[in-house]
Length: 230
Image 1 (tube, rainbow, N blue to C red):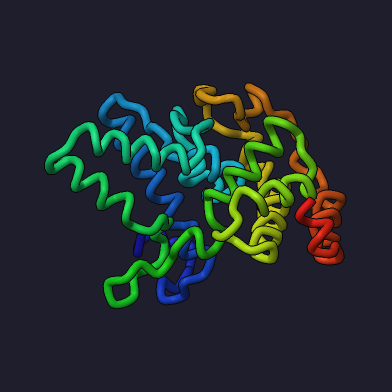
Image 2: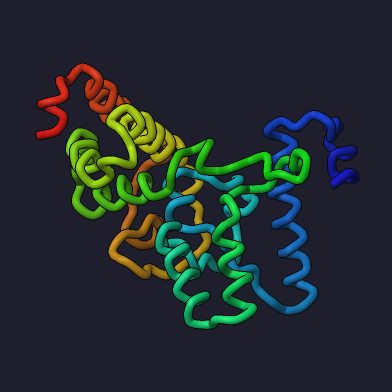
């Protein structure tokens, strides 16, 4: 990475978006070059939840020769890994469970005193909420207001109305703004009933506006508690 930073004239002590994204792109370049050397393919690890939020570096971890997890939400990935761990038992179970216990992170910033400095869910929100939003938006076409009401019931005792509204707003804002990354995805299978591949279920212009959806979410603050819970 030090050579690349010299090439582009970037100070590696400045941990900005250039510092982060350059690492993601260099990782991908190295993997693809090694794949060429060995006659192999780079299999993408990005999942449906990350595609929905655009939580990937364009032409970095966003790219691969084949995206096997493209239609699998992160909550399901975690469930499958836990299931595999329980089935395997022994040392493999310990390793997989340790992975699940580690906070989700892009790991593009140095750790601080040995502690992960980037925790994805602190930045973009809980994946269990985003996967809930995504499923009901895409599978059934529900409005933000209806999804908000459903989330209040589903996650009662876990998230309050303000928290759900906050992350719902982030979800729609990122979903619309990050379509350009989904418009040029590598091939991947459709596993469930929801997919975002432009060669499968999803057709959306990259310059689509989220204005009407965001207005509906922002208006939720003006509703009385009785109306919200109905």
